[in-house]
Every structure is written in structure tokens, then in C-alpha cells.
Image (tube, rainbow, N blue to C red):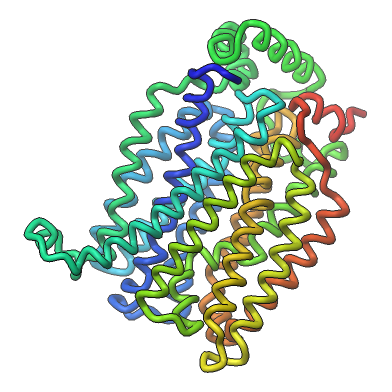
Length: 461
């Protein structure tokens, strides 16, 4: 995959991850001001964050079958439009209901790109680079998260500069509106960039458009690669019986239950360990641990930067070290770091050690970013057979998103009811259980074609 066209195509599609990370994380800083403006209760605080995940859950379930029907590229284009309008609606909100509507609209875009982006990248990448290419999507997600945190930090500090043009922006009064509304810009850029992206050649081939698939693969990778891929794909499809469009019943056949179980386990433990709570409530968490208002925004930036740096490390290692070693090492690091964070919170606000909390959470984010964060989507794009891949990713992604929704919704209540020490100790126990389960069921998929993986992981009668 050395051609500029192929690399450019992957980079453009991976921008969907940036858009998702940026738009979804702007609320982290805005939340500090929103909860005061609308006088949110504990439950409302959870809903303000989790509403996006609620609609993302619905979108994840729909996006796979929709991507099979209309194409991966079409779904990505629709998501870019949704992101643009959701940012405008949220920024212009004059009630909590309107703000939630904007957040929920954004969730549809998040769910769509979570499924269609990694799927497209996996389907055009050669086996030797597929892990790295799919991880690139996660890298762009965390880049978007980091820049969202930096954007929030800059907006609250630009208020201190006395320039006429800054005064006209009313940053002091509209800080949270600017934090949320700035997401419309990247959405427009991405929509334009998608004009230069072809449809997935595997999707074209699965719909009988072999000549179009051959042209795209040849343009991206050369004629020899194109013919080899199309031959393997035809052989794979020849094993399939029944209708071309997969149904839920197709997923629950005995030969697929093993890979479905792997997907569900990975999907649950990626979120039940609390990563979405840390990213969505980082500023509030650091304030709770005793950091001042300005320090909490700066520490949130640290979280974003650590997330970015260690995702780059995963990007460099995933096709060299493999999926399984990264996953197991990272889960062990997550468990240890969460234990440190729990210890840092102590028995109450007065007993908290902000430095230990920050160190523990940065270690947790670093361990997540080198393991189950990016590796999950690589595995999802690899372990399922061609004909059911879109539907299977939607189903395990649905499980992942439901857990994410519950974790985000309940986090303010957990912190209020149990405190930081118990909340993060629970997350640590979940990470330890996840480590033990994944050590038992997780396969290694590095360096093998999608069709080879199907032959080894799925029984064919």
C-alpha cells in the first residue's frame, strides 16, 4: 500500500474518526458551564452527556445494514451532514431540551462513522497493514478528542485578551456555545473531502459490480493485488448460502457463535472499565479531586495529549507486536492505574490526592490507548465473515454502545453516592476481570487476510 492514492483515501476516511472525537468531546469543557446555566440535577447531568451515546447506539445498529444496502461512502457522507447540523443546534440552544436535541442528533453521526469508517478502511487495506490502517481511524478519533480539549481550554482563556474582534464574539457569555458550535467547521471540511473517495471495492464486488471493484483496487494497489483480492473474495462468497443480505438469524448460527462471543466480550470490557466517563467528565473529575477550575481544564488537556501519544504508539506496534499482546498488556495496565486513581481519591474530597488521581487516570488512558481502545475496532473489522461483517459489527458495536451509555449516565450518580475511590475501584475490578476473560478467548489476527481469518475462525460445517 505504497501509492499516494491509497494512503490519501485511507486518510480521508479516517477523518471520520477525527470528526467523531472532536464533536463528541467538546461537551467535556462545555459541561462545566451548561450544568450551571440549566441548573441540572444529578440525573440530568448524566443524561446531558449520555444522550449522544443513546442515539449513537441506535445508529450503530442501523449503520451496518444501511452500509450494506447503500454503501460505506454514502453512510459517511450522511454522517458529515448530521455532524454539521448537530453542532449548530447545540450551540444555538436556549433550553436543555434543545441542547439535548443537538447532542442526540450528533449521536446519529457518531454511530454511523463508528461502523462505516473502520469497515471501509479494513476492506481496502492489505493484510500486512490492515491493523495499522484501521488503528489510524482510532488515532484520528483521539486527535479529535485532544484538539477538542485544547479548543475548550483556549476558549476560556481567550476571554482575557482585550481585542475588539474577540469582544464581539462574547466569549465570556457564550463560552459553551462556542465550544459546541465550533464542531460545524470540521464537518464541512470532511464532507468536501469525501468527494475524492471511491466506494469500497469489497462492497461493489459483493453487489456484483466486479469491474468497478477491479478498477478501484487496481488504482489503489495495482493489478496483481486487485486480481488476488477479487479471487479470494469470490471464493469466500461461494461458501455462503442463502440471501446476500445478512439477517440476525445468520449471526446466531453455530459456526459464528465463537467469533460473536469474542466480539461481545471485547465490546463490553472496552467500556465497562470507565473510559467514556473519564473522557466525558474529565474536567469535573479533576475538580472533584481537588484541582482548581483552571487546573482542571489544563489536566483535561493532558488526558487528551496522553491519549493521542499512546494511540500513536499502538499505531506503530499493532502490526509488529500483534493484537493479543497489546490487548493483554494494556488491560493489566488499566487495572493497575485505576487502582492508583481509586487510592488517590481516598475516603473523601478532603482526603483526595490530586497528583495521584491525575497519575492514575493518565496511566489508565495510556493503557487504554495502546490496547482495547484501538484494537477493538481492528478485531471487529477482521473476525467476522464478509457477508455478515457489517451486521455483526453493528450488533457488537450496539453492545459496546449500550454499556457506554449506561456508564456515562450513571457516573454522576456513582460519584455522588459512592465517591471517587469506590467508583474507580469498581472500574479497576472490571478491568481485571476483562484481562482474565480476554486471555482465554482472544485470538491473534495479525498478518492474515480477511478470507484466511474466516477459514480459521469460522467453522464451515
